[in-house]
Amino acid sequence: MVWRKPNSEMEMKNRTPSVKHGGGSQMIWGNMSAVSVGNLHFIDGIMGKYMYLDILKQNLKQSAEKMGILPHYKLYQVNDPKHNAHICRLWALYHCPQLIRTPAQSPDLNPIENIWDHLNNRIRKFKISSKNELREKLMSEWDKIEGNVYANLVKSMPKRLNEVIKCKEELTHY
Image (tube, rainbow, N blue to C red; front, side, top):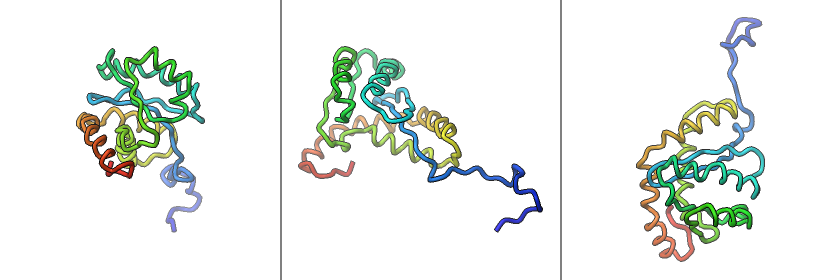
């Protein structure tokens, strides 16, 4: 029940912006190192191999420079079909100092998954009412991620690898 004066329901003070169906989602591409986060790229539509290649071309070297790891960075990506597409592998061969290959179905080994979770928790604190507002918050919170978060994730890689070996292909606590 709402109490207000007659014919005042359309006044701004009586209106609350809302987002239908849980607010939707925003697909993003980003990268990180032990010292910083790189660019955050918003993806509209369905990402295929050509869109992924364009994202790499626009962001990878620039991100490595932003993070201060150029020219000796390593590209770590999961075995997504678009990552393994011939055109993307060929581009990476000529433009990445080193490409780290990962086993299939290995989210335990990918520290960026923890960054996405961390970012998601940060933006859930806000009342977001539009996709543009979501993008703004994602950008601002991405740049505010504390250095110890990504440093600890990268440092955890040897433990992650050992636990995967110990668990013999079963789930780990990562």
